[in-house]
Length: 381
Ligand SMILES: Cc1cc2nc3c(=O)[nH]c(=O)nc-3n(C[C@H](O)[C@H](O)[C@H](O)COP(=O)(O)OP(=O)(O)OC[C@H]3O[C@@H](n4cnc5c(N)ncnc54)[C@H](O)[C@@H]3O)c2cc1C
Image (cartoon, rainbow, N blue to C red; front, top):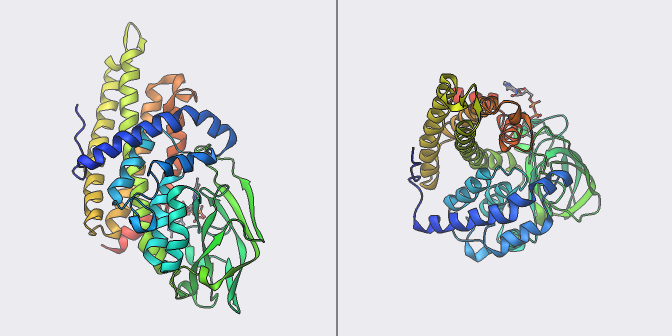
């Protein structure tokens, strides 16, 4: 069955896809075993991607970006998912961190940070989650206390993607602990600030090449100019406005993984024989793969509609919550079926399906858990 070209693709994006595919196949895939062993990508992967214009593609050229749209980021996200890579935190760096700066940063902040994120000189991270709170973001305890013309940041964060390599961290902190959600601000902490310390790179079930880390802030002094934007207390609103793009990125990755798992499993089951015939020939295999193909098709139609609506500025929060929970859930069901159809080889890390299965599990958890997605949807009913 021929894959349809997504409605939001055009000739320019086709050319970008060729570049992104070559980059992922040559610069990322061959090194994945080493990334997993060292629990991070090579630092110069970022600058090599930056040299080719693959970072911050949806950031305006005046700030060093590619001057494109979310569609440009989407192409790289898909190509990265197609090679089964979960180590390189580029979607978060370009599609999330850079956009907080673009949307809310002062001119000075945009000029100071965006060009360096676009070249890969700086790696970005966003630190919301704390050991004591994840879903309930209003309960963060990290503080940014105003002292003269500085903030003093104290607290700890955990599960932070790009945490070990990040040079710029957007930290969710309370500037007014008595004001609930209205007391939350986003502050920019550079990785070389005294008092900032990185903890362990966390040992995860999947995404083992990704440097998900603990971060500690002990009397970290930052100038008031490092408050994102100009007004305190805007952090919660900023998060609520930016989380939909993060969830769209996750959903897009999940759909691509679903499609890729189907391709791998059709190929494997046609090649592998049992009881004198290809595993594909058993009715169970055909039915399972028919179900996966249906899920892949429905998910693709849904996600393409979401991307097209997002490009028009019309994607609403409940719809993207639907996309996030649905695609990550269906991807996980499909991956489990596909792994099963590989038999014991499915459980071996040398076959991509096992790694994809372990990598995908977290998608139901991060970016807002799927239970929180359903809360958001239910509120709109
Ligand atoms: C690999 C990885 C990478 C991550 N990257 C980042 C990152 O870069 N930056 C960052 O800030 N965070 C990151 N996270 C953290 C992630 O966003 C949180 O783990 C997630 O938001 C859930 O928070 P929690 O782990 O504290 O779970 P909890 O909030 O403690 O939830 C536990 C369970 O309770 C359920 N629950 C909670 N509240 C409700 C409710 N109201 N209704 C129904 N059920 C509820 C949840 O759905 C979940 O099933 C990452 C996590 C992982 C594992």
